[in-house]
Amino acid sequence: MSIISIENLTKCYKTKKALSDVSLQINEGELFGLLGVNGAGKTTLIKILCLLSKKTSGSVVINGFDIERDAEKIKEIIAVSPQETAIANNLTVKENLEFFANIYSKNNSEIINELINDFDLSSVLSQKAKTLSGGYKRRLSIAVAIISKPKILFLDEPTLGLDVFSRRELWQIIKKLQKSTTIILTSHYLEEIENLCQRVAILSKGKLVKVGSIQEIKEATGANTFEDAFIKLLSEGENE
Ligand code: ATP
Image (cartoon, rainbow, N blue to C red; front, side):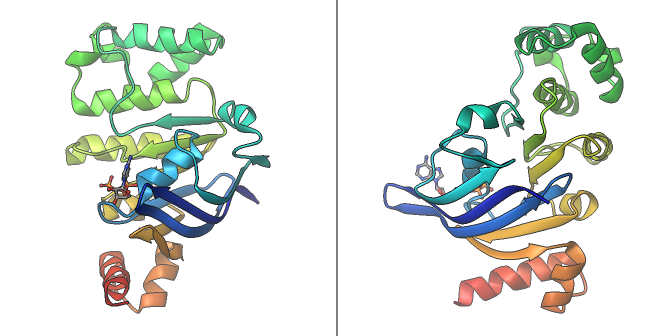
């Protein structure tokens, strides 16, 4: 069953068309990837779905709610972990968790302990966020994003700039999160998309080029690897 239904979505910034007639269904419980080169429209799409930017035309329905008419209801069920981490730098890790837990008035100690455990944060609890390594900053940023127990979580380039070990540790955390949340993530790392996502949408210059599982996309393009399939699809777009 689709939890996000996008029909003919278009977004223009003045004269720039960042999204053009995009139609896409994302299923409940899916870990769904958005892929494309710089400027393809991934962040624009995420911003619209997170209510941070307004569409120009088309329709978006999230969990049965219209993105414009029912924006307040949608806000209650989504969370976003943006590219630039959304944590309070001068607070410690524990204080960050407490601060965000208080905003959502959740059973603080229970949820905080759960997050410390799931995100393996116990060794850095008393460290100020600004002194954390990139990997721990991302973990904390995702941890505070899910304090509200969202039905849908958006992760914009969750492992950008992380070393291979931190990246793989974060993949394990993201895989665990999928058990309770639909996740939509953007990434430039094809390996990451292959490892994590059940299905992926490839965008190029604001247009949807392909949607499907990694296997389906490889088969449709006749490519042996996902990277070859990706390059082939984008090169075909260039020639149109
Ligand atoms: P990246 O991988 O570099 O983050 P992206 O796929 O997320 O790229 P977007 O950031 O969505 O791409 O940008 C899509 C297009 O819209 C680009 O051409 C970009 O320059 C343009 N764009 C994005 N935001 C704005 C804005 N606020 N005003 C004008 N143009 C914008």
